[in-house]
Every structure is written in structure tokens, then in C-alpha cells.
Length: 294
Image (cartoon, rainbow, N blue to C red; front, side):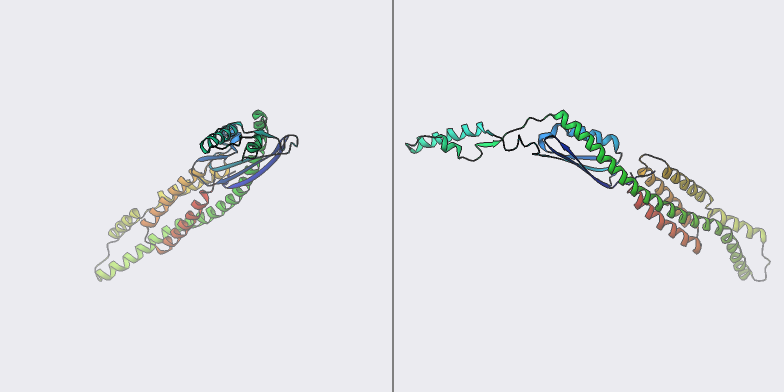
């Protein structure tokens, strides 16, 4: 069954030290393009997230947003540590200022302790393997939800494809049934015209048949119709198959459009021209839909 390329999913899980949220947004794209957004602290698992996502999704612009909300572990909450590099820099500059200005005050603990960012939140050691194990499970669940949504949208596209292909088949059958009538009408018009021009001269039936044969050969659309019907059959096979077929569908629809253009250029019949326009309109709508297929 075909899948849409668009979709959205959001999955949460609770860690010992926080909450993990994986959000995935999928949009149309010619190829598979994955973007991962994750806090710098957990940057080491970004490559694994991208690889895992690429193993399960085939096509589309995929944005994976991973949020790890810390603070559920109350023992670690509120812990501070000294920002020693900054404190040393403060002390050095204050000492230099004291000398430059000839000040008598000593650089004191109270003075330094009140300076900005002398104390910073303590860095909590993170078990990255444990983070990845939880991230992988949550990511899998989020991808499952995304695929489910894509399949639901794909089912709607599938039904739309079938209805439009039915319209195209009906139009093509109308064109096929119209061809013998077009030839017969041409023969009648040509015969009437020649009789009018030649008047009392006897009409050469053999010559008339030759002219009709030449016209029939020039306007023969049998090959185009056969190829078009074959393309429809291949398209239906893709609809019932699996995997990424969106690009193949687009190519096949281009071929169908080429065939119907040739049918239109070969025939001067008004009724066939109307059916050609109708077919091209449906093909245009099919191509729009195919651009949404994975």
C-alpha cells in the first residue's frame, strides 16, 4: 500500500532524571533528507538518531526534534559549583584595578562571591548509553506513529488515484470507439466534396479509398492507446505494491501525458479533442497527488 510523505508524530517517555520527547515532522521531498535537532549536551547520539530514522523512512524531508527535559531527580536539582576559570579572571582583573588606581581595599571573598556567574549549576554526569537506549525506544515509537499517519493519508490518495484512473479509462474507451466513426465521417465528407468539385465526372472509388487510407494512417492512434493502457496497468501495479513508488509514478504519468498529447495532435475530431482535454486534466491532478507519495 502506498504512503503519503507528509505526517506528524509526538512521543514521550519518562527517564530517571527527566522527560524525553521525540517529535517528527515529515514533508514532501524528492529524496530522503533528515534533520535532527537535539540539545548540545546530547549531541553524541545525533548520528544514531539520523541513522535509525533513515533505516525506517524512505523519502521526504524529515525533521526530528528531540527534547530532554531534566529536573525530575530532586537530589540533583539546585546543585551549584564554582566557575573557577571566571573567578580567577575576576580576581586577576580586580587586583590589576587595585594597583592601577592605588586603592587600599583588598580583594575579598565577599566581593568575588557577589560577582555574576561566580556560581553556576553543577554539571550532572550523564550516561549517554542509557540516554540512547531510551531515545531509540521513543524514536521507534514516534516513527511507528508517523508511518501509521502516512499510511492513512496514503489510503486516501490511493482511493483518489483509482477514481481518476477510472475516469481516464472511460475517456480512452470513448476515444477508441470514436475512431471508426471519425474515419467513416471523413470518407463521407471527402466523397461529398469531390462530387461537388467534379460534378458530372464519375467519382473514382479506388482513389477515394486511397485518400481515406492515407488519412487513416496519418491519424492512427492505436499504438498510443495501447501504450497508454499499458501505462495504466503498470500504475495500478504500483498502487498495490510496496516501497517508495512516488518517483516512478511521476515518470509514468509523464509518459501518459506524452501519449495523450500525441493522440490530440493526430486527431482533428472535436469529440476526441474534448476527451483528450479531460484526460490531461485528470493526469495533472494525478501528478499533484503523486508528488505526495513516498
